[in-house]
Length: 305
Image (cartoon, rainbow, N blue to C red):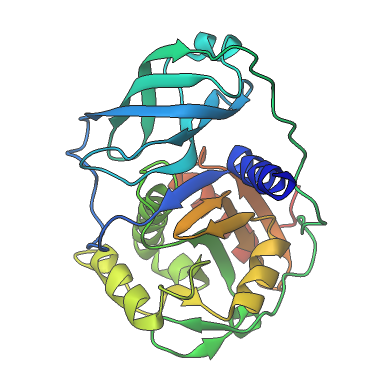
């Protein structure tokens, strides 16, 4: 019983820090979940694990969502944030999950509360993480072509780095990072001089599934039809479990695999040409043009503020 409580506590901590994802039946070519501007509704039922009132999110251990994803534990944005004031860990909720092309949220939440419910304790993530000005790690990685490299390979260039895994289902998380980087790639390619001084890197923390061949097949559709794109400019990478843990940990990424489930946070960084960190962003509340501006400043030799 004690071990079970500890496992639930670790899961709750990581889930409250980031996003939880689990594989759909098979990976598919990248595409929006629904037509742009539309939201598809799915019925959802689950138990509250933790409540992030400041962030407007609730983490649920939910049942399978028919036609969309398996049962798992993950945070969801809430349309009417006021209801978070009344939610407690242990509450059972039913709601409508609205999924758009780049975001999702819960609406129409109905709560039922078993008697004697008690709150779960949460603690902050542990460890020292890199910050602007620190030297980025030269961890050995392998790209989608099977070539070994590290950030040191791109010294002299400004590099945008983010973390994903290819089977992540919710549009708010890995799919949003992929779409953001696709837009960054397009904006950079429109400026040949800046394009030549920059690189993009998406690192998978699911090396058991995301082999170089899987990453190549996943990446290539993002590059089709974009003028001026060079295939090697945006790399997708994997590595050993130890190397990915080392690399992701430097950027403050937390992730946990339990069975086939991932609970993870989000981190996106810009590495300056001298190999130091220029900027780090947490979460998904940033736009492609903002990252392009950081890459532009870093490539020009500006120091982080």
